[in-house]
Figure 1: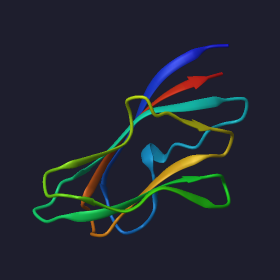
Figure 2 (figure 1 turned 90 degrees about the vertical axis):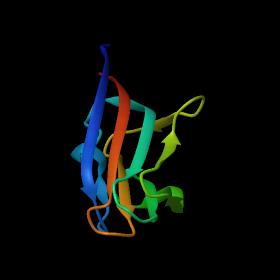
Figure 3 (figure 1 turned 180 degrees about the vertical axis):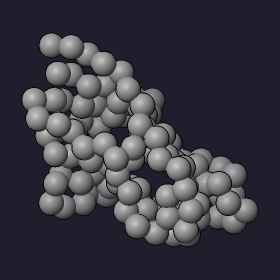
Figure 4 (figure 1 turned 90 degrees about the horizontal axis):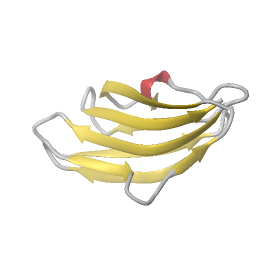
Length: 110
């Protein structure tokens, strides 16, 4: 089994759910999210939803969390990790168009 650290990036996320870095866990792969940060790149506060999508349904990690202007929200980090299985993705939605950047750090085991 190979262990590979990777990062996935998405810029200017808006009001449509966006898979961070267009990343979906592939077959025969186990993925652990070791960090996920959402930042507000606008002059006003926004709210964000972050969910784990299992291929069919969204399961919220945070719902309508406020991110101040120029600030960030660490959704996953420190002692918390999130395990993803085949076909899973992490999606972010913002309350405003082109307002949120997301950085996700993962460990893939193949």
